[in-house]
Length: 390
Picture (cartoon, rainbow, N blue to C red):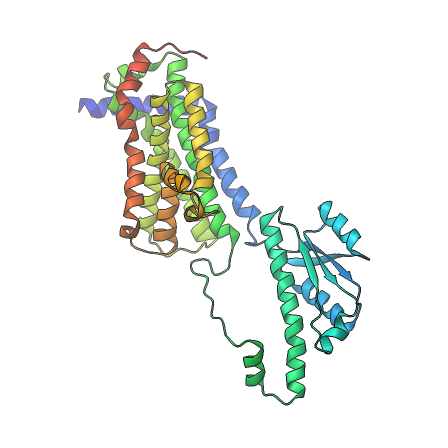
């Protein structure tokens, strides 16, 4: 009973600090996370970029070339915003950032196409912005293929070929493609679900280190330990149960919003989401506590927590696959809790696979939860003996 009483006293003390004494907790636990959720979900609400500005240099000016330009303008991702007189103007516009790509149609393209002399059309695109450049290239490549296919279809039809023969000649191999788990190809589904949890784990790690650092800064560590009966385990559990409950509430609101309001795809059940959310919160808080235990300094522990959390967004493997990284980086990716969260999420929640398929990532996330156990004695010694140095 004494442990339970001390635990409740520490939890009430921490709740009082959060509510009455320090507004930073409210902003970093509730306000900023909610802003992050709405920022990413609204910025990517259309799923893919639309109407990227494209330029055209049409020196052929024939019915065929105008048809190609109209088809390009009708593409969902591209919009023909500029028509240039020559390549120099188009290149300058791309250098100035007015267009992401431009299509060059040479003079005589239509006559060469009809006579079977294989004319060349050129498209130039900037890869400074990888997403915009790739999508513009895809649209222009599609237009080129459709133009040649239209001429081939007309020739074969004039020779009396049937529809089946024309289809077999133009596309000998039929492709049956399946985009698993994200059939819409939406960036919202693939990026929001890793950026938002990553930023939330950043707040968890920062606040857990900040909370201990403030006890040291204002010399209230002895009072904190005394409230817990000088038991560091009770002190840590009582202090961070309030943090965990608040972050869990925010995460559950985020999960409800994306799955029930925005209808993000998922095949995993409710328990799968709850289990992963709980591990996410405990892992994020555990890493922050561990960072303070390694470097018992407000400034240094928060620096470690922020650096590691920001790097985890790049190292988790959602944007650039870990399998494509160098071997040292592949090994290093195991040291980031967000990497394990993402692997469990895409396997169990997104695809509905059993958790046994990613049990090693589950164990790793549990290990981050238990990291504070190895620095508890150092944290207690810090609160009792260290003097705060700015």
